Amino acid sequence: MSDTSPVILWLRRDLRLTDHPALSAAVAQGRPVIPVFIHDDALAELGAAPKWRLGLGLEALEKALRDKGSRLILRRGPALDSLRDLIAETGARAVYWSRLYDPQAQTRDAAVKDALKAQDIEARSFGGHLMFEPWTVATKTGGYYRVYTPMWNAVRGREVDAPLSAPSRIPAPDAWPASDTLDSWRMGAAMNRGADVVRPHVRLGEGAAQDRLAEFIDRWVGVYDKTRDQPHVAGTSLLSENLALGEISPHQCWHAGQRALAEGKAGAETFLKELVWREFAYHLMYHTPHLLTGNWKPDWDAFGWNEDEDHPHVIAWKQGRTGIRFVDAAMREMYVTGRMHNRGRMIVASYLTKHLMTHWKIGLKWFEDCLIDWDPASNAMGWQWAAGSGPDAAPYFRVFNPVTQLDKFDPKGNYVAQWIAEGRKTPSDTALSYFRAIPRHWGLTPQDPYPAPVVTAEDGRKAALAAYENRGF
Image 1: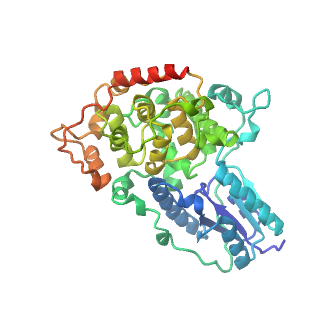
Image 2: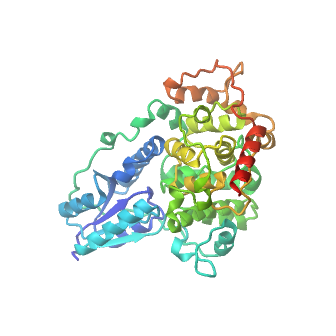
Image 3: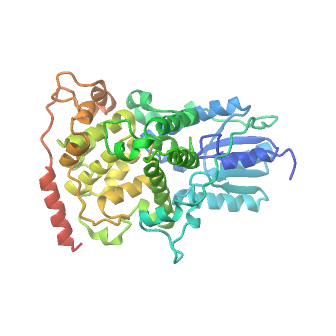
């Protein structure tokens, strides 16, 4: 291999320079490194909010690369074709990338690796998106974990690689290959007017992600076990946005949590458990990829969910107009911030799948379009967990009561006041922002009366339990 031939660094959901094993390995070769991001079919299929957020992330990464003497090359088309073109143009003899674990990426990456090796091109994949590779965590019988708690117990004492430092400089080639412009990709086109509403709530890029982690560890992690369920309190890390695009690594979060735990901040263990919950989702997606597209438990295949996306109850749910205040507040939070509090996610998912008896796939698809922290594994497992069709050691008949949940976790009504404007003389700015973010054709205004429940908490629970009993669950 020529000592001067470049290494192509194929970037995907790893938009950072610190703790980046593939980047560190590429720089260690001592040869020029060409970072590239490819707009292929997988990216084309992204929903409006995650695609827009990815575009912002790429813009931030481009600036960070230029500070290191490098730049980001953008190409559009099938990944293998784009990489082959770059190899031909630059004389590169190696392509490095960080692993992904969804079935579409696995199939694509395996084909790319085989094809490049057949051309005598070094093709190497690296970890970094997960702390524990899915094939390294197994039960005593050699299988994968189907329940979270045993997996937590299996990995809680394992060593997690220490984060790597960012390179001081990234060697550049003598001449850069041609690149698309990010503007030409129109990553935010489908967001329409919602982009201006959501943008102030974005914490963009690696530096902001590290600041967010530091702030959380300093202020909130000690009481995280108590505040994480209170939707009106800024008591969560909000790092899902940055973890989804790899603007921060789980390794960095884990070691920060471990240091906090060693300092006596008891809530840090709950934070560590949440990081492993994310790993659990990825392990299930890797070992049972049908998690993304079908019922994880096949017994649910014949269950009679509503699958009509245009059903009036589904429309009310999407609009945050169900008449159930916890559900509606959480949905509106998503439209304004691009995120939703974790307790809210459980409530809105339970209400759709149980009180409204609607298929979890409809909710999964809607979140995929609306969340800036959309993650394929976490989104799928979360929806199936709430619906009862997924991995869960608890009985299927868990039906959250959205009214008593609100009384418990938002007793003074602060969360509702933050997000629901109707019926208030002086609505909050955040509540009014909902009307600036939603599609105009919904025809909603703050002066509209707040609706009566489309299905009450009591009636929905009774109907759900009756349906489960009739199915013989």
